Image (cartoon, rainbow, N blue to C red; front, side, top):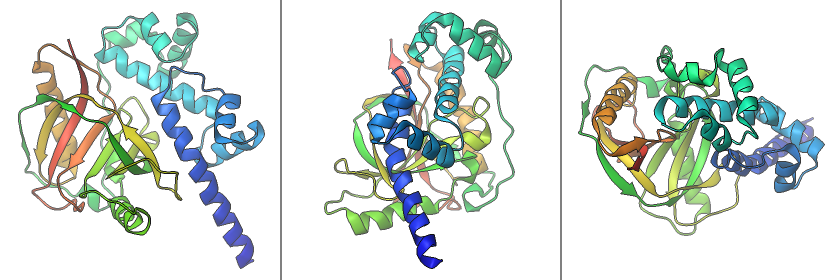
Length: 298
């Protein structure tokens, strides 16, 4: 019985190891062919085995997962971008705007143009459940400035669920992994990446990557995988305070400061959090965190 349990655990770890690069590929290439056959070949599995593995570990079929990401990203673009509906449809990998509009209406209950005119949705914040959601009444924000960030290699562990419930222990796990596996290391730089917008993506499906800067790419090891954070322009605001409810509140103020910036277009996702500390202590009242929102200079 113990042998069978160990085999099952090994198979689960192997499946996750193969899936992580595919999930990174999907989120970075929503405009490309993300069919089952294409991605199964990329993962070196049969269509049947890949479909079953994906559904088991992601909780959705590949088709429903990619469709949801495309529609949620399109909803975000409708509110923040000036592109017309047809342009957004093609950017999100739809073959024509009619197919996009029908799918969008099924997902959000209204046509894309009507959605664009509606108020940007907000989601209620859930009651905190662990240390990363420590409450406090005090925080400070700097002014928002636009800065170029260079591309860097990241080791990451993905969390799916409410942002306020992310376990800070994921960063400790990355540091332990680095000690065991990385022959060459850099000064510790911890980063968080939020891929989805609360209020558009359901809370239980929000994707957050706990990340550690590494010097070079590597093959997935267990649930630790590699991704490249691309270079680009970001609107950067420094937050000082605990990593709890006030950080959530600070994002509202950051959004207000973004709207005051001139000669930029807000891309908006993914949101990057660069932590200036070498260990994540959510309750520490003087955490310095750079909130980085991708933008495009006009």
